[in-house]
Image 1 (cartoon, rainbow, N blue to C red):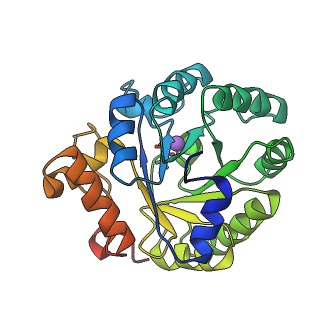
Image 2: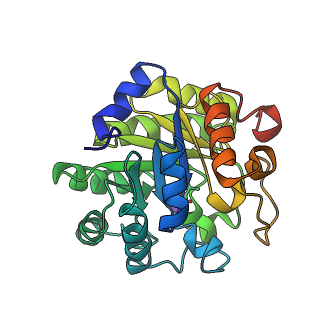
Length: 265
Ligand code: KIV
Ligand code: NA
């Protein structure tokens, strides 16, 4: 079996071992990431933007994520595979279970769900049925219509709510927690406040691990304003394998993200 399992994640946090995660959508990149020390691969619904060319993640279907999950799952020898439940697929417990089974049958080992609130019952529903869950809090891109855009979350009073939500998703049984676009001190407080590992993207260096979107990590122009936390590791590493090693080394050394790639407050 592969070295990265669900229990190994909690053990990594207890040991202070940083987790290195990237998104991938196809076998070629997945193989390069797996072979060069990436611990977790996410088939993100970011595929709606970076692969399909939409301007949000909302149009992505379960079948889309299944297709890319199958392409990635076939080549992994080391990394744990997480796949996103796309918009609407977690609207009810029944839909979420159905979609999660499809993702697991395609090779995912954990499904990711954005938000807390009524999603807590859905997390519980899946975990009770032996489906590992990764939670995603802070900036949740599936909330873009309500939010009116993509911006930093958890500032001011919202920081306390974020901490409460993080404790609640852990209590509901989530095994992992992605924190997106959250001020560094808030992400640090959340990380200290839960036993499950946190994976930051735009959430500062104090998370238990980091994730970046493949295309951002390689410095490709997304057609959108480049967020502050994005770093072009291809420029640093000189090749895809070199970029992965540069990123993994920087995450494990705690030097990525630096202040320039994080939100101080
Ligand atoms: O879809 C995605 O790529 C994600 C990451 C940004 C965490 O959810
Ligand atoms: Na996502």
